[in-house]
Each structure stands twice: as C-alpha cells, then as structure tokens.
Image (cartoon, rainbow, N blue to C red; front, side):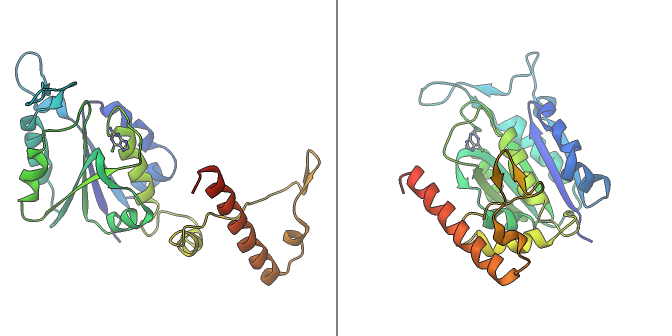
Length: 236
Ligand code: 6GU
C-alpha cells in the first residue's frame, strides 16, 4: 500500500483545516496519506518574527526571506524517511497544473508544499533546493489569475492528487472514464438523475432506453456539442 506524505508550510496554517473533510480526511484516517502542517513563522527570528522584506532592485510589495524557508524545508527533509522528495513552490509564474501533472505527483513518495504570499519567495530557495540530491523542485501555478498566496492552490493540487491514489476513491471506474475524455480536450457529457421529469424538463429518452451502445454514442455527441459551446464562449 502506498503512503504518500504531505508537508505543508505556510504562515496561515489554518487555511488547511478543510483537509479534515470528505475524501482527503478519509484518506488520511485510513492511512493512505499523512499530512503535516508547519507554521513558517516558527522559523522566523527576531522579536517581530518577520518573514518578508523589500525587494532588491525596487518595486512594489514584499518578498519572503529565504532563511525561514530554508530552515522550515531543511527540518521537513531531515525528519522524513522518504528516499526522494518533490518540493512544490506555489507561484503564479509556475508550471500550470494539469491532470498530467497531478498524475505525476500522485506517484511521489513525499510532497512538500511551500506556500508563498506577497510577491513570492526569494528565488534562491528554488535555486538552492534544485541543487540538492533527492529533491525535485517544481514551481506550480493553478491558472492564469493572481491569488493572495499559495494556500488555496495547495488545496486544489492536493485534491487533484489524492483522489488519484489507489484506494482513495470508492469507485475507481470514474478515473477510467476521465482518462478517456480528458487528454483529448473534450469536456464530460451532461448527467441526469431522478426524477425523470423536473420543472417541465424531461431526461433525454435515450438514457431510459437501456441500449448501452446508443447511450455511449449519444453521450459522445453531447460531449462534443458541450465542448463546442464552451469554445464559442471563450472565443477559441
Ligand atoms: Cl500557486 N499562487 C498565487 N499567489 N497565485 C496563483 C497561483 C499560485 N496559481 C494561480 N494564481
């Protein structure tokens, strides 16, 4: 049985309380994953416990100082018994999260999430860990918009990754269906459940027919129509 461990480092550890819920909460309770949360401020020195400073070269905002990050990440690495580590640095300048990236991360032994705030983390943190053996550094973004920090992005990535771990989903067949639809960049067909009639809208007859070949073909046509509608809306 695989057990992936997750270490999350942030100045707002309370952001991660939803991890107790639902799929991820159950995955942790059943021992499929272990999750540890670390407060970056525990590694800050001085009376003010400051974790940021003004950017060299000028410009707006603040940059997170390298030393608290170095201490926090070193401590996580030193207390891990994994042989290799993926250090994920959350930044809008990173590689975009895709289903492909999520499935790569689901094969990792140990994932460390460094949640930057403000204008991000001093780049030497990336450079330093890129030079460490057994650490693979990835700067990751969850899309083309700016968030206040990496915490919510971490929740998104963890949900995408953890549901791919064997044993986490009650019905692993849903993963098989997704893997058929997603890489071809076609969205899922629309779904319906009971009642058969709701507010004057009837479930398409064909779905009540029991003819699985016809249903499959109909769903494929619906998925294509839905994808075309999306493309029109986004002007593709
Ligand atoms: Cl990972 N961080 C921030 N601050 N903004 C983002 C993001 C990450 N991904 C998309 N926008």
